[in-house]
Image (cartoon, rainbow, N blue to C red; front, side):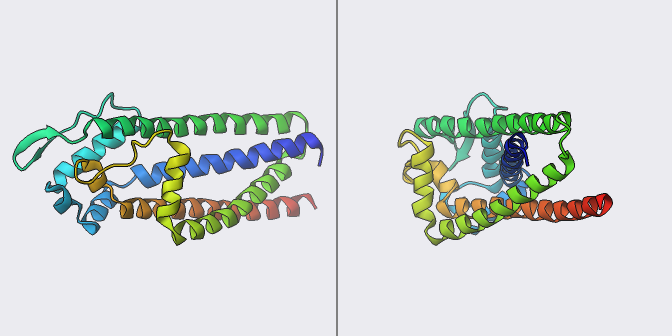
Length: 230
C-alpha cells in the first residue's frame, strides 16, 4: 500500500472511532431520561435532595440543555421544603462552565472528524486507489483494535473506579471546582459516584455495540468485495 494510502487509512480509522465514541456518549447521556429516573431511584437521590422526581427531572433536563449550549445559564429555580431557591450555587455553576466546555468541544471534534473522514474518502477516490478495499480494511483494523483497547480500559477502569474517575478530573480540569461537598452542594447529591459509574458503563456498552456491529458489517462487505473482484 502506498504511503499516501496508509496515511489516509489511518485518518479514516481514527475519525470513525472518534465519531462513534462521541455519538455513544451523546446517546448515553441524552437518549433516555427514563434511565435518569431509574438511576435516581437506585441511589435514593430524592431522599438525599428532599425533592420530588418531577423537580429533579426538571433540573436534569435544564442542566443537559445547558451542557449542549442550548441554554445561556444555570439559573434553575426549585422548591426545597416549600422554599424557592436556585438549585446550583456559585461553585457548581463555575464547575459546570468547565463541563459545558468539554461537552461542546466534543461536539465540535465530531464535526471536524466527519469533515476529515469525507475529505480522506474523496482523496482516496481522486488518486484512483482501490478505495473500497482500503476503506474497508482501514475500517476493520481500526474498529478491531479499539474493541480490545476499550475492553481492557473498561476492566481497568472498573477495578478502581474512584481512582480513575479522580484522574479523569485532574487531566481535564485545571482547577478543583469539581471537588464538591454534599453538605452544601446539591449537584453531588443528585449525581453521586455510583451514577457516573453506571453512566460510564452505559456509554461503554453502546460504544462496544457500535464497534461490534461495524466490524461485522465490514467483514461482510470486504468478503463480498473480494468475491466480486476475484
